Image 1 (cartoon, one colour):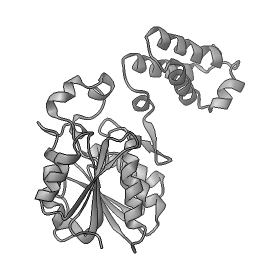
Image 2 (image 1 turned 180 degrees about the vertical axis):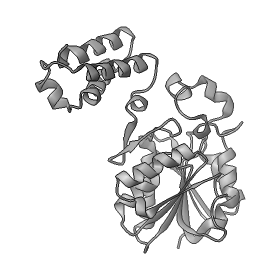
Image 3 (image 1 turned 60 degrees about the vertical axis):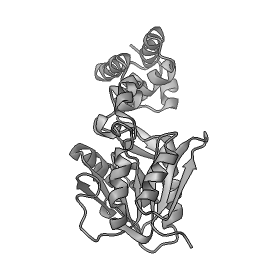
Image 4 (image 1 turned 90 degrees about the vertical axis):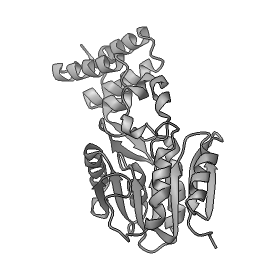
Length: 285
């Protein structure tokens, strides 16, 4: 079978299965299986496909037909212009989370050798993106999952910042040394209500790690845990950046005001939905 016939055959299977992105998915799988870019896929479409590569394409297609997301199958997702490897213990980085990187760069840009902390790091996409922008930044990344931390270290090394990136296994602030202070603390914690998870889209419900989704009965358990101890680890002029679910701005703000934070703001995403809480222990000058 030649290149063109192979990937178009997969496209047709996806169309029959009702997959809206049939052509795009098939082409992405062919590029990965055949080790070609988009232009090569066109220019070399009459070439015969080696059996091993055809088998790889068929394996990708079989997983997609079972409902597995494309990025999970390919094991890689772009974020902040960088490519991040994934595994079963990590969430897929989302464009909305880049809002934390944008604001984080504003916070650390004027500082000398800032120290940052990322809680529930997953792929490490937030701190690694920050590290690639400034060479004097160091980061500590915490996660409950050893598998997630392994992937975060791999991503840090592949982007050349592994020497400034430390991983610690544990729950929130537990693995940190008492008295350690950070200029910036970031987190995209689990914020979905436990009872809602069963009704999520299958691609999320069945393939994203529940540990990174389940925010407890009201979706706010992680914010309460972070608010309770963040003041012990945040520098005097430090900033806390947290991703939140749409509609959670008011309740998350109340949690941090109640924990003694002097300045708490809710920042919307491009769609106008609550997306990030910015909190300071002391009011900015």
